[in-house]
Amino acid sequence: MLSRLSDPQVLLIDADDTLWENNIYFEQAIADFMRFLNHQEMSHAEVRLVINEVERETILERGYGFHSFAHSLVKTFERLSTQPITPELHQNIWNFAHRISQYPIQLIDGVAETLNYLCGRSHHLILMTKGDVTEQSGKVERSGLKDYFAAVEIVAEKDVVTYRSIVAKYRLIPDLTWMVGNSPKSDINPALSAGINAVFVPHDQTWILEHETLDPAPEHARLLRVERFVDLQKHF
Image (cartoon, rainbow, N blue to C red; front, side):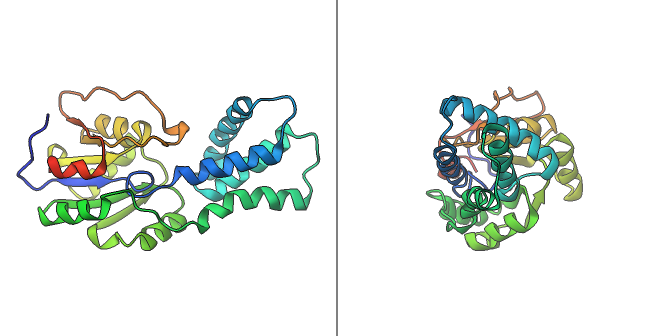
């Protein structure tokens, strides 16, 4: 177990499903879409596999966010339905995705108090999220959490190159820098590979495309696993 770190640390903190709920709304939209599709030959599990594959394709073309997700649902419908996609059908499918933007920001338990605690301990906080700049900026503003962070970084992808660029941009000391998040694929493994430390905060509704086996921490980095975001108070 990592003892509480006395020196000020830099914490790069993920947003979606780390600070606030996100994927639960996409899952609800997918469930509504599959009922609407009502495929007569494929099971829900089989339809979901197609959705996952289409989402992978769409991300490469359009990035992340509910606009990209809407295109994925339309493309899935075109791929699986025998019906032509009329303007009315297109709008109905589009609404499943865009309804997501209307949900209020629901902070995960203990987030605000933990950020306040970390700031009080003189740790340096940078919010680091990937996706559409307008969409993610709006979430940050609505969350009421922006003032806890010294900076907000909205990136197209979280990979080794991106983490190294953030380290260089802010002249961070890798040994004192941590990436905190719920995604092994985007938050933990590439951060460790980039030479910084990581804190894995699991979420039981993490997006399936973010699932990946956690890499062991290399010699030059540390990996901390906690049960909840509030548990950061035990270590920092």
